[in-house]
Image 1 (cartoon, helix red, strand yellow):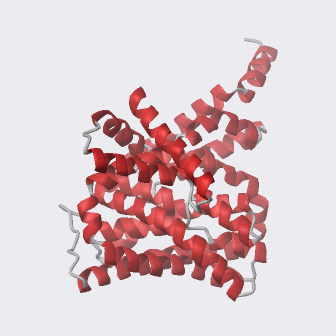
Image 2 (cartoon, chains in turn red, blue; image 1 turned 180 degrees about the vertical axis):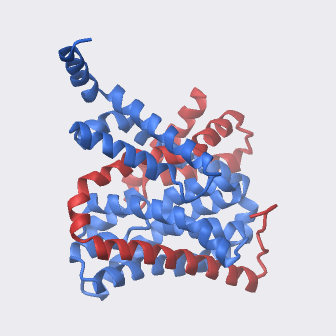
Length: 122
Length: 241
């Protein structure tokens, strides 16, 4: 587990350094993910330990958003004073984005015969 | 125990990282348990429950967010390595991803424009402050990218972070019921749309349901960060916001 954590952190570290060196408009961890992907693809490593630790980390991904989400308490007054535009924009825009994205994906998948992507059951 | 002793103890506890780190994990466990007891219902969201518990606790004890974060930062820090860990499901499902490159590209452009455009239009039409409109425009993008774009276009980065999290929880709660209603059974499309709309929270939620959905959500989150950092500054300039 420690080896796997070191590998994940190492990818993130290299990602953060590269992002700063080339002034890329993406966060270091995202570049770190690309690096980890390339490592797996190029070495064809089974990476049993990295695999197990990663899966465990991802299965509780929601936990990791709680500290940031709690920060909403700092903005209660502004959100309250503009509650209507903020609430309507969040709800309607989120619903619209979900609908448009899923429909365009399905439409183009059908047109390009990219399969139906159905698993065992939805 | 006499009251002063309890008082002293609380002064120590409320300021120590140990207490708030423990509280964060316990709040999550309560939220997660509620989610499971509700039969895994997307409407019972563990982040929403945990956040409500923690904010109530912080307000009731008069504890500042800064003090809370000194403990919670250890959990927050793991977001970095967890993002790197997304490479594993991406690698495992790469054949499926490669076959779906065209739908991915088309849905990315459509979804990214819809997310930013509709948020700007609705907030503006309802008379929101321009700073709020700009902060809302990047609401579907993962936090670090959203804050960077927001700062660039004259939004408020910390307000942006709050709106991003609200969007994440909202989107993650709406996605599954909406797709079931629409009769969408394609896990790739469902995951991708959840990732475009609700970034990391949508991705986390997608992984709870299906590995392919989670993979496509993770890809959508990354790509939408890039697309939005191109689209939104353009939109803001075009609309003279």
